[in-house]
Amino acid sequence: MSTMNISLPDSLKSFVDEQVSQRGYSTSSEYVRELIRKDQNRLQLLNLLLAGTASSPVAPADVSYFEGLRDRVRKATKAAAKG
Picture 1 (spheres, rainbow, N blue to C red):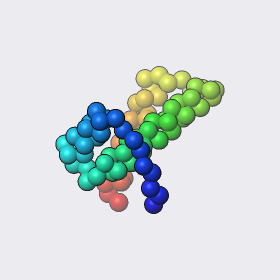
Picture 2 (spheres, rainbow, N blue to C red):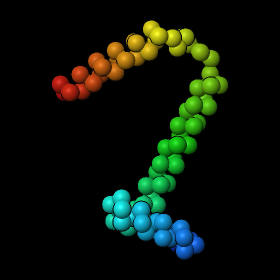
Picture 3 (cartoon, one colour):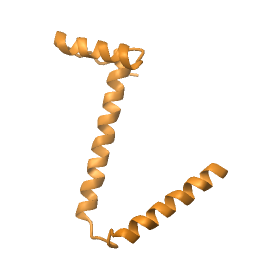
């Protein structure tokens, strides 16, 4: 694992220290790693949404589409619970 040193103003350092103690992180590094992972996930979701808006629609997203989607999720959830 690589090391990176960052400089924070006192107010931000205090905020990080509070988050570490209040939210159960072991270290400030653990808290910052979690923030970076969440930002990576947010960017990935943004890219997927942008790719989706640039693609051609395959089927209308109407009531029946969402009912079918819910049915597929329910079946997958039941199958995962059995396995």
